[in-house]
Amino acid sequence: MVTDAGRNGAPPRVLLIDDDAPFRTAMSKALRRRGFAVDPIPGGRAGVEALNAGGVDREHPAGAAVLDLRMPDIGGLEVLRRTPGRRVPVVVLTGHGTVPDAVEAMRLGAYTFLTKPVDAADLAPVLMQAARPSGGESRLVGESPATVQLRRLITRLADADEPVLLTGETGTGKEVAARALHQASQRAEQPFVPVNMACLPRDLVESELFGHCRGAFTGAERRKPGLFEEAEGGTLFLDELGELPLEHQAKLLRVLETRMFRPVGDTRERPFRARLVAATHRRLADEVSAGRFREDLFYRLQVLPLELPPLRARPADILPIARHWLAVVGDGLELTPDAEAVLLAHDWPGNVREVVNLARRVALFAEEGRVDAELVRRMLAANPFASGASTGARVGATLVPAAQTPPPLEELTLETVERRHIERLLAHHKNITKVARILDINRRTLQRKLKAWGIDHSDIGL
Image 1 (spheres, rainbow, N blue to C red):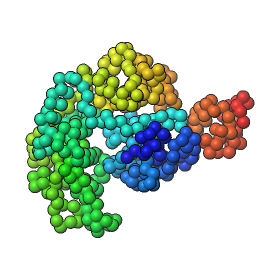
Image 2 (tube, rainbow, N blue to C red; image 1 turned 60 degrees about the vertical axis):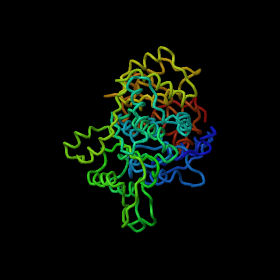
Image 3 (cartoon, rainbow, N blue to C red; image 1 turned 180 degrees about the horizontal axis):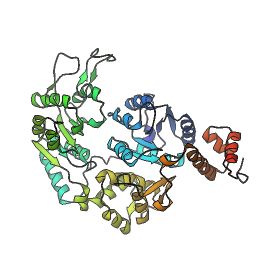
Image 4 (cartoon, rainbow, N blue to C red; image 1 turned 135 degrees about the vertical axis):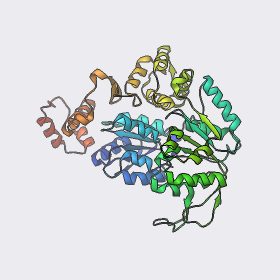
């Protein structure tokens, strides 16, 4: 769901989900000065409700959301897991995050991530980019033999009634392949309903998939159709199928065998009139051996298996994918030959998802319509998909090499973090009154802090 503002190029309405009240106040003011409409959300629980509803006001849906990963009631990753049907692109913020946190957030569907401290000048262009409809998600891009063969198989299998199982490493483009299957079929004009099983809370799996009747359980005040019903006539895509709890696997098998399902609390079964496409990055044969996946369901899904190889095994696809996504998010940015060489030399542990994330970040910093090798290296230096520690860190709107990287935020005291943030704001704005207003504190309080830290502010405007 994207607001009209997001479509016509004006700033979208933004959900600002963060438990830090001073940050919410300051960032809301700063974004509003840039033309954004902002709905501050004071924590994870309220964030789940707002994201599931598409905003806090039905008349004015949100076009993008900002989500803090560390919140005391419900953390950002859990918010993503509890909002599997959200249509609002989410930009994740973390001041404490680890590399696995950032990767997991994007696996759960986050648009991208930024590191705190962040100011509106850095955040605004990311939100504009996130809210812009791309239309590139269903394109299976690439000219490698593996991708050409995959497109050929998708065409052949598009109108089959049997379920398709897509396998491959995380980020290889399994949802893109599922959408391509849907678009190539006679169901293309009907719904494509995706759900990430890793996002569904265990106690809500059955209700989300099959729906429920009024009064089926406490809080079920009205009938709710499930995803099996919403996908009628189209395609139901169950991503991360390996995360489906064992107790629900038998029910999925029964649906595949009988083409019928029963909503929670209902006495009648309903017909399942959609194509099922499932995907997993797990080796299901190993999951069967470990007792975590039903053998009969495994064999039922093996009728039409498709494997997507990792990007490192199909290097001929790297540049076409990068060019495609730069065209989608960067208004036709072009790669220089030396930038292409850097891309080809990278091993892409995050696969296609990593290329997409890189394109989104590059598009924010590229100048004069071109992307050179230096910019690509800087972005890869802060690559959240790289194994081990990152070789660089994001500071403001630029990236600094590892030799200049400050210590990890976990090693900094709260006072040090506060001081660095204030120093950065003062260096940028050069006005104590303005910085105090951004921080939502009294100007004299700010002056006392500067004096206590021994910071000479005599040359800074009042």
